[in-house]
Length: 404
View: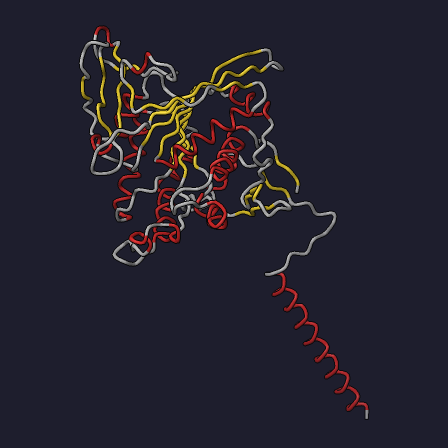
């Protein structure tokens, strides 16, 4: 009788133990998918800044900066705010004006250059839009030019005179022009400039920031592929002395933007590259070496990735184009090209403050193609304004750590 009771109790104990172990294992498994929140536990993450991006890149083999996040809509269903998953973006489109003007003064940013294709031009317009809205800032209208030469520099709407080494005492002026895409080689206005006068009354100081956009359609392109009349003009009466630079990028970095040199370059990935990824890697390395050679501190350069494209809005002839010997769609190709850029630039980003990388715009843009995409490769103005707000905040706001 005692023996039977002993075995019965032992069996009950074993069954109870197995149930307990099963319950514990289920809790552990559920922990993979659920987050239990305690009121006394506060999660912190850094504000979005380039120092934050550098720290994140340090602990990834590829240096890749994820662009995922959450887009928020207002009561009318309109997108009004992006919240990155990588960091805390403190503001939406409306950034406190004093924070930006204080930043520009303290960082001594007086001359900003945007380089890119037609999307880069739209980002430049967004930068002008943001600066124009800041309290105490008066910006001119954007001056648009087919190109610049000695005569153009004397016209209104030109705020930066590029000086090149030719003529008497090397007092020449840099010249540049552009061909429009297409067989007719028409001219198009791809040199944009504006000036913003900033009255920082709370600091008792006034200063000026010049902004400029110049067209580049590819990561690396031959000098005469889209540009013309590149070189140096000794004076108003003499002809242009052609540049000896072999690529548009070398001419821009070594000559056109050498004097005066910008305080900040913002370079946007283009929608025109479609070469094999192995060649893309080579072009990225070539551009990086040009920057290493010609862009010297304290000038800094932000290099941004390509955003997603919407094949549904493209012409029929482009919708089903395949890449990498037919193994990739356009979206897969853009994603791969962006990741190559991060991988190739990681070492420079970590080792010098001159190079700045930004979270991937491809992932940021994919969820809002229905809202913002126009023709497959261009977006509505709101997209460019959101991205430029993100850039300005990463540059100027974000030294603190905020609890959320």
